[in-house]
Amino acid sequence: MAQRHARAYHALAPQCTIVAAMDIVRERAEAFCREFGIAHAFTNVDALLAATDCNAVAIASPDATHAPLALQCLRAGRHVLCEKPLALSHGEALRMVEAARTSGKVNLVNFTYRNLPALQAIAALVNAGEIGEVRHVEASYLQCWLSSKIWGDWRASPLWLWRLSRAHGSNGVLGDIGVHVIDLATFPVGPISEVFCRLTCFDKAPGNRIGEYHLDANDSAVMTVTFANGALGTLHVTRWASGHADRLFLKIAGTRGAVELDTERATDRFRLCAGEDLDRAQWRDVSAAPVPTNFERFVRSIISGRPEQPDFARGAEVQQVIDACLASHEGNAPVGIPALAGKRLA
Image (cartoon, rainbow, N blue to C red; front, side, top):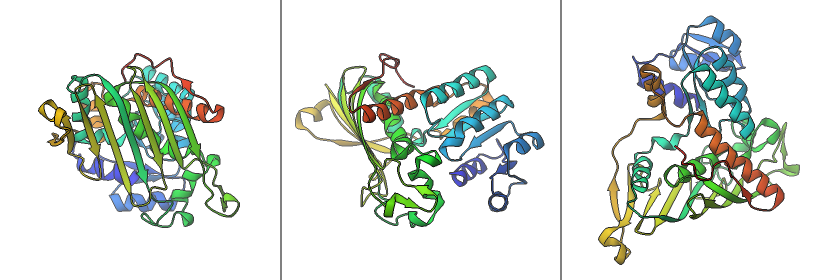
């Protein structure tokens, strides 16, 4: 993800310049800086903030470090773009929201699928009432890196192993890509008011341990949800979806039509069944106009002083649903989310 960030900011020059990078392993920091032509490498954030005049920081580190790093950078007067999930708990996320509010600095969470033209077009269409009142929602995020070597052998790399270990700050597939599905569904439809969630961690190694990594974080999740508008939905995520490298799917059905997004088909168009097509149950492709990326929104907000989405408050809203999912699984019962009921998520 740090590489993706670096390429994105280089593409935005001269509006912004990457002046430094930090990794706790000096060799990695220096190699990263050589690869991307960055002048200064650091091994701790204190040194980076003290030695540079940067006015913004992008956090692309493991989940457990998001909150402490973001709070430190905000206190130091820097704008912050943080990778998802924003935090490991809703309470932690709320502290980040308050710190951002107090600082007055730009704050965004990198829900990368906001970059999809099709999703932005679907959200506008649904909010305009083009498919009527929403009744049913299907959403999924399917990956196969546990059942294949699509991105290399996960058993041999800390890059993947930490994502499977709660002791290393992972909330499993729910926290890693479940956040995307929750954002994907609620961005067009509105907030979730109740969730019933089941999580599973399958055996992956003898004793479910590889070196220092105890492989105990969930790797499949299924959520049955009720939206605040009364619609029902099923959201599911897994790392065992053989044949799907990285597929995001969304279908929203309403009283006057339906829309469908499948990233394996396209990200700049979606399918629509509405109008004259509704009574024939026929679908047509609809093209979507390009939209700015989160990286562009971040830089634009710093320059203009106008807030952009998705911000830390949005990240906290999604994290509240994640917390409810964990509680639901633990108690084997639905969990209500009253704070979000009736509130449209941006």
